Length: 343
Ligand SMILES: [Zn+2]
Image 1 (cartoon, rainbow, N blue to C red):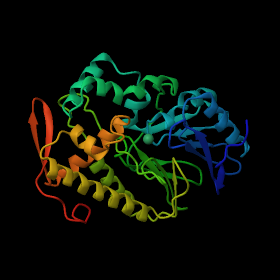
Image 2: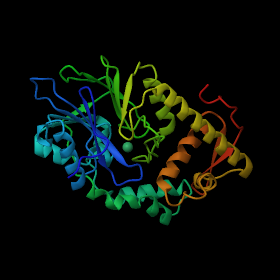
Image 3: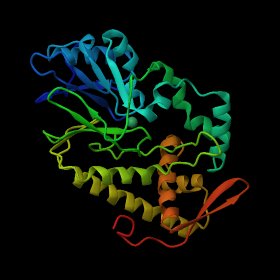
Image 4: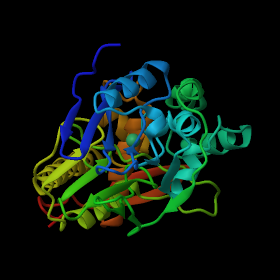
């Protein structure tokens, strides 16, 4: 197999991209190379669970004189298949430890949803205006899920502030939910470097995925709001280099986050104007106005985007929520002034 483009060394860090097969291209795994005399080889995220990705990782590591079987510790930023898909196989081949945030367990151990879960999700999405055919479409990606990962057991649950003992390269765990509940980033204080998972990305704004509550007693997470609480946690860090899971190194995380806030604010304004013009709309109604071309083909991402923004508008007092025949409707109270949301 040929060398993967994008492989690069930054001091003790080796960037090892592998293909995902998705529109957003490669995922970067990062190896932390051992200090001389040590055999501690750490890998952050794994790539998708496909043979081609296994080979790509093997070829990447070989360039630095290592093999997958040499990995001693695998750290997971979160439980999406491009990040943990190969974890079970890597663990079996190397005997390594696998560590991730405690909330990751729901993702990395998952199998295809039970019929009870599907029934519950259908009712939830009906409340947003979707019928059952749309629901099937939104989740059709799940049909292929079992081909790109194997369930994996965690050896250690990470929590916010947990210090990961790597010789000469200790990492602090920072819990940054938003993109998903279990997302963490890893901070190396001495060299001022951060591994950002999907929390901070080059050229793509992270999607804050819609949370479907596990039962009627569980309150739905407002993922976009949570995301910005997490960015506010990361902003004060004096970071020199951010290594994202997709794309090249980020040099100014504060500028990047300011850009995210600006585009969120624009979208809030746009949704606000849609509500002002149309009166009360269901979340699906907003989605159809906001994304007239892609709402149907990318329904889960689109509904995530719409709900995140509607939550913010409602929480900040710019939109009112009513319910009719079990469906939620949002209407405009007022349109936010520029700068009103993030100050
Ligand atoms: Zn992700």
